[in-house]
Image 1 (cartoon, rainbow, N blue to C red):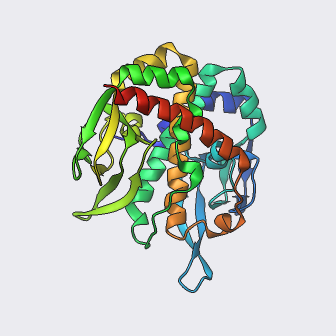
Image 2 (image 1 turned 60 degrees about the vertical axis):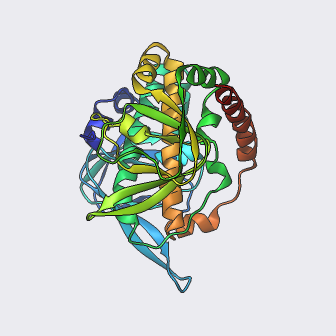
Amino acid sequence: MAPSPESILFESLFFQWAQVNCESFAVNEEQVLIEEGVATPDLFLLLEGGATVRTALETEDASQDSVDLAELSPGQFVGEMSLLEDRLPVATVIAQPNSRWIRVRYSDLIAAIASDKALASSTYQVFAGKLALQLSRQNAFIHRWPGQDIEPLRKVLLVFGEWNELDVAWLEKTGEKVDLSTGTAFIKEGEALDRLYIVLDGEAEVMINVEGASTTVGSSRRGEILGEMSFLNSDEQATATVQAREAMVLLAVDKTSIRQQLTVDLAFAERFYRSLAVLLSHRCRDQMMSRGMAAQALALEELDLTTLGIVSTAGRRFEWLCSEVSKR
């Protein structure tokens, strides 16, 4: 069973830190906390009451409408995607009357985790767990809008921009090479999954069951991780079926080995959970934008040249991994 939003946040070291070090406040009348397309310096943790998450939707005549994405309950939080990606918010968050919140300044959190690896690991684990739930719920309704396949530059090799050379070397040593033929379903929705997969070559189709029919909700390409959502779920059940769209080469890494490494190396834990959080955040954003959502944020975006440098470094790490695995 997937963890609840309340348990992900309230049982974490990150929440304990926020309670002690950050401002709490009450909302007495409807209030916009985050506005789509407008930079925000804060995370908001919901303690009591509720909130509405709303995004702009581009219609067929190029005008804009809006759609409500979620109604928030205590234990949920917002603002982490902009912190992880350094990009504009994809939705407006409207706090309901009689709600209570904690405001976490990005600058305060960044300073705190820089000197506390345990807090950093907890923070990114909480972010990743929340985003896994968010993406799972988004998958369940996103198919209602027609979409187009997009592969923005910044999504490529995201995790390799977060890992360092020692992390990649450890994964290469620990993992097993897997060759797949076209049409092979190597992850099946609802079944237990004991490995994470890194896509070294080829492309996969991601599908979920919607009212008895298989519906495609995304794709995964070279450099991406698969199986990360089940890694973050306590029951480790796959939330989607993943099938090879063409011949594929994967690196399969046993989850037990990863968890052991997370326990003994907090610096690795910080980088690993951050990489999952960043990847899931981009998937949520890209899935929305491919369906015409977050139209206001998309219209205001500019390519960050820093991203080009990160992708270049990540690409070198990824190609080294591919080269080493190909020798097997």
